[in-house]
Length: 166
Ligand SMILES: Cc1cc2nc3c(=O)[nH]c(=O)nc-3n(C[C@H](O)[C@H](O)[C@H](O)COP(=O)(O)O)c2cc1C
Image (tube, rainbow, N blue to C red; front, side, top):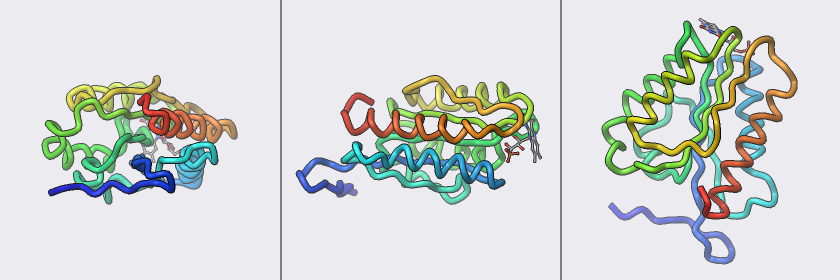
């Protein structure tokens, strides 16, 4: 099936940036809003960013995405069950078609976070997605600068897509 691409006012293809992140708390909701706000910086012209909960995101959403930001809490030393369910459902349907997809990752972890980063990296390595930057680990007691880090991550990903360098 042909995928019709949106174009902006100058006829440039609008790139789709998909954020797949669980938000079980007010803090994690603020993180995803900050990431979206970074993606929607006024200087970024031809990128459309959307957020989906992992349980609502499908293989088709991934197939039509030009870049992906993954966001998860650490639960019991691993990514959220919701993000794991997302990977379980999309892995084989997208495996051959989305190699090289640029992605970024942020992890909100009250205690540690390393188990989650390594678990996500194993899966995206299998998918052959391409990290555009190091994972962002938002670790320990919640800090107000966590939103700034998510905003910067969103801006970096969106600006890289916009400039055609991601
Ligand atoms: C069931 C459950 C398990 C958790 N397990 C871990 C864990 O293994 N490692 C960790 O760093 N934080 C763990 N946490 C803390 C969460 O990562 C943290 O509370 C969550 O990211 C929400 O952040 P917030 O408290 O800033 O809203 C757990 C939280 C819950 C509810």
